Amino acid sequence: MVIEILNKNGLKTGRKIKFNYNFISNNINIKTKNHLIYLEIKRFLAAKRQGSHQTKSRSQIQGSNKKIQKQKGSGNARKGDIKNPLFVGGGRIFGPVKRKYNLKLNKKIKKIAIKTLFYYKLINKQIKIIEPFMLKTISSKTIKKLLNKLNIFKKKILIITNKRDKNLYFSSRNFQNVKIINIRNGINSYDIAKAYYLIIKENSIKYLENMLNKR
Image 1 (cartoon, rainbow, N blue to C red):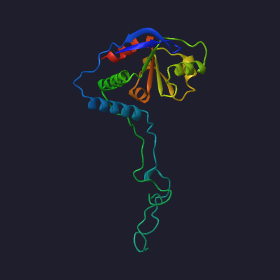
Image 2 (image 1 turned 180 degrees about the vertical axis):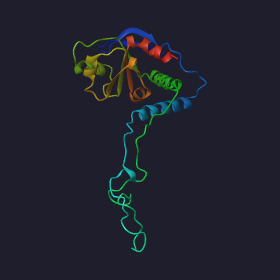
Image 3 (image 1 turned 90 degrees about the vertical axis):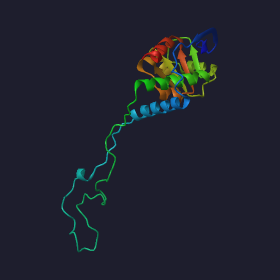
Image 4 (image 1 turned 45 degrees about the vertical axis):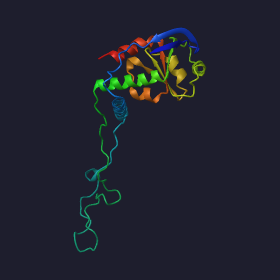
């Protein structure tokens, strides 16, 4: 797949670049690929959950263990101590407890999911390649101007870089629909699927290809 390279002003440079990575084998059908994407996104979102929710059970409530009333003869239902879950302030029955929501997936599945998403973005022309540039100062106006030139300002955008650029980060964080991710810190299927357009710096292509082709 060949894509035209744009400059920092969103104009065509006349140069083109080809994505040179081996896509997944053709013996995996589309339904299977889509299911793997679902599993990977599910794993990613589950790993972000804190799992610190907890309620107190009967044994964790402070209170007397004395039986409130005798077992029979009162005409009322049987009652235990004050920590009975049926009373206000008592313990909770089958309440949530601390747990980890992590799901285990093989690395191969994660790689197939990311490759498939990149392939979908490529065939739908939702990837923009721009020349590498560094912002000298923090300027949201510069980022807005670039996105307007590309005619994608109102879309969800993921900017992929291979170097940490503080000025680029601080210039973009005012826009809720723009997110920056560093390849060296790892990219994930969730951010790729959530973004409508991907903006990739030209000098990041090699790092991206190495990551996709790495076994």
